[in-house]
Length: 228
Image 1 (cartoon, rainbow, N blue to C red):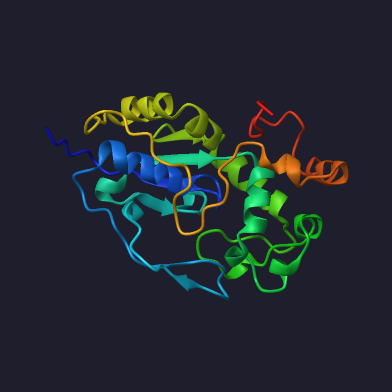
Image 2 (cartoon, rainbow, N blue to C red):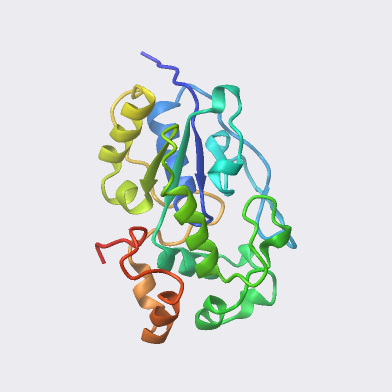
């Protein structure tokens, strides 16, 4: 039996598992709906056109602060997904299309300490003088700490390591019905997937880099994955 569920919109900081979540939702709850989209992505100075439609594209909400993005009729069901900022920083550095040409040539250590120039980006603007660590932390500390019960908050790590349990949580929140048997979607989806590995940051961060990270993020922050 084909079940039609009410659509959901996914919000996140860039490189936080957005496409993985959208794909998992599509495969399990929206198989009967055409959610494909065409469009562009990447740094504001070097936008790239999708080579083929993104099959789960209509589930993507935005990379903005979720409270700043109004709900839209049937699109008022929302999820915010966040990921350990250390893995986010590494993923962004490896995804050159998110950066201008000069930043794309930086070493990871220099990238971590360089201010973003996302002030011209519609959805994920950065404040002047804000590096990636500050940008990530300001994003998740607003969205993931919200008392707004209209949207669900999940982590990339939970989704990757406990996919069905996390989808069951979403299904219960939004009264969704699986289209059939649970489908374990591949983690590496979207226009420019990286490794999709929890704790990959350990291969890139030096002790000095970690100390720099903790200048802006409390060591006991709930937004840092405690499993690594």
